Amino acid sequence: MNHASSSHAVDAHTRPFHTIIGERRATRHFTDEPVPEEAITEILHDASLAPSGYNLQPWRFLVVRDAANRRRLRAAAFDQEKITEAPVVVIALAPRNGWRERLDEVFAERVRRGSLPAEGIEKSKQGCAAFVDTFEPPAIWLNRHTMIAFTFLMLAAEAHGWDTAPMEGFDAGAVRKAFNLPADTEVVALLAIGRAREPDAVFPGRFPVERIAFSENLSTPWPA
Image (cartoon, rainbow, N blue to C red; front, top):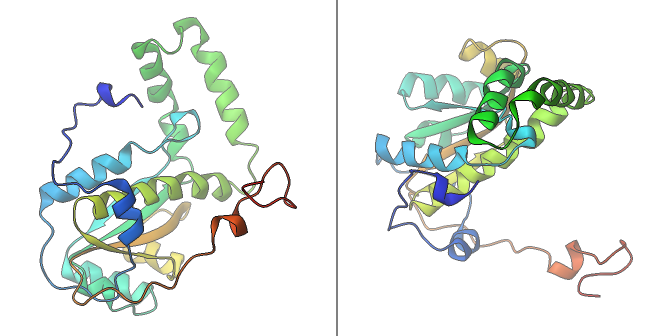
């Protein structure tokens, strides 16, 4: 997306990207300091700018702040204490056919913005649907795209000065039941947002670039 096309105001207090990714740690325990609703909205807006195939944006973010709801979520997520400690937990979801329900709207917007001629809309929609339907199971495609937006969400929260804890440990069926979600909704990940109660854990380190990146083939480490 062209940044100039967004009316979203950039927060002067956001931190530089390299600082964010260099200092981010998964928070183990949170204080009860609330996250203002305005801050949550800013973070969600930033996450909404994530890219997706055909701009279908298949993700949904369920913001959980109510204490009773966080207790229900904790029970569905292997009793992780941080879920009830953090004032906000976001559940990243992907309805199986959510993208299909918005297909007309997405392509009409492309026509409105001039990126697609009106006479090409039906052919483009058919091609898009045919492509997405090649993924079996559909959860593969849904999870790929939702995790991109989830990463935007996590880094946006960090950029605005909040601490986070991404979580993949939960019973998806129990989460769906606790929040009355349709059976075909993918529960992708959880993100606790708040203020860390204690200093970050010791950084466990990461593999160097030459161990994870390669040049032209997997036998030649980067840089070649």
